[in-house]
Length: 159
Image (cartoon, rainbow, N blue to C red; front, side, top):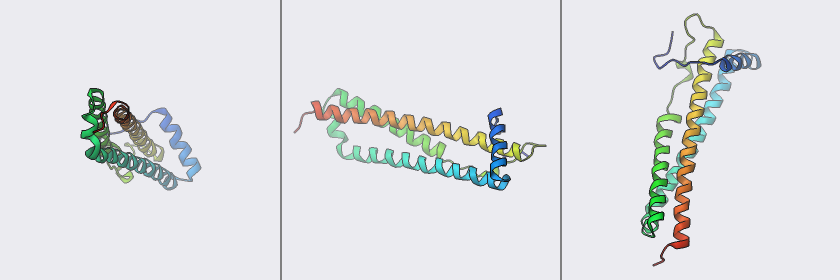
């Protein structure tokens, strides 16, 4: 029986990895434990990104208006950077930190343990790709944010 969520579409690489997990794990229980550890790593890293993004937004509350008032470049770099940081936060909350329990997965009709693991591996890989997008957005936003600060230090008027 399929899960009530959208079904995963495993690739041949997922079949290979599922078989490998069963072989090295010593069965489906151990393979599931390994996968749960991998999901924990993704969850922890997403929380770290969220913390960094929150710090950027908090600091902006104190220094943002002064940096933005320093010039047009600083204003646009700060606004663009914060927009990307916020977009990253929203994707983190709706993507990497969204929960789908391993126990919600089911092998397709007529499937075996390999088919079950394929579904979970496909989901893990999708979450990993999503995490990479979130990371890229955050890094791009922080780069623009730091460019605004550097512009402020170099060209800003100190009152």
